[in-house]
Amino acid sequence: MHLTAGLTDGSVAAKQVQLDSLTSYLARNHPKEPWIVAGDFNLTTSAFTIDTALQERAITNQTVATLHSIESDIGDVGLLDAWSVARTEAVDDAGVEESEGLYEGEEGATFDPMKNFLAADTSETSSNRPQRYDRILVRPQDTLRIRRFNLFGLPDDTDGMQLAASDHSGVRAAITVQDDVAQENALEVEAMRHLYVQHQRAPESLSKSTEINRVLAAHNMVATQEEVEQREQAFTLLKQIVLGTTENSDSAISDIPLVMVPVGSYALGVWTSESDIDCLCIGGISSKTFFKLARQRLIKAECQGVRIIRRVEANTGTMLELSVNGIAMDLQYCPAARVVER
Image 1 (cartoon, rainbow, N blue to C red):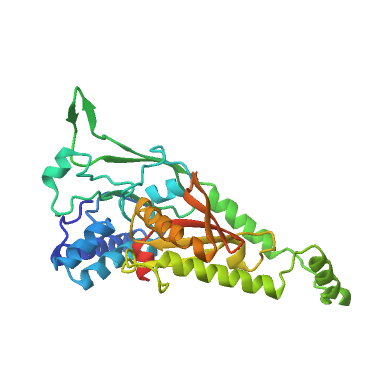
Image 2 (image 1 turned 30 degrees about the vertical axis):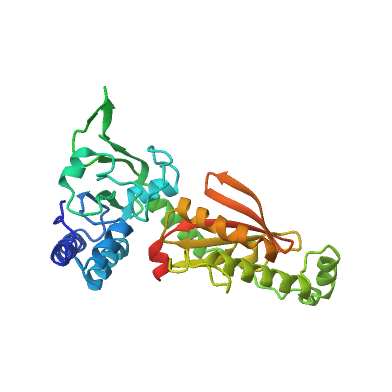
């Protein structure tokens, strides 16, 4: 397939109509069969490009909503994106991409004016940001499974000159057919229906929590009220410093939409006195920019009992290990502008 190109109110509306026509045809004529839909969807994915077009009034808020709706509709009809599945299951042959300087929606780009001179010549957006236009979508129906995924036909530099076969990179997926999976699942379901479960009332002693609470408290597994308050105060303080909501903070990132939430054991309420607090900040700026600005704020807050212990570069990204009034805290960041908006 090949949807209408361009980021305008008219072209985005046309894309939605074309995709609706395709999925309606498939649902009507092939309701039970697996589907594979591949091609150039021409859907702008870069959050930076979309935001810029909106600010320049090249598109309306309704068009932005339509773009989000198209992405949702693809999942609603049962289609899975081979690129997303491969990244989740770690079978993306492209490997770990360099995400520094990239905005949301720019990873896995098949049209990259920043690295492909042909794409730069044909780009129809002023920002020239990478876009993931080309996709392979699969509706498995317990029959198909995505095994591998990669890009090919990438630009190459030879003797100081860039060579590119096309303004787009190719997308390729290896998909296996599993004819026996549906039958095996049906047999398992049928076996579960005949499984006899005998219900019995638990002994009364198991409903009394006095003993277990005493054991947990003796081993410092249950937090005291003082520890609860200390952690609440530490999280609130760190949130104010990082988001720039304290009275003595400058306005360097005050206007940047950011959200900070606890994750891990603290968020689940299963932490102990030995646990640290895992904090995740979500925003629309790059990871490099966030940590540069956050570090400046944290250094200024040393007088408030905040210390940067060390910076950790892990496979999952950058993390700052902190001490906030004696409470160990880990700060991580995720660039996801649309999540912040919601």
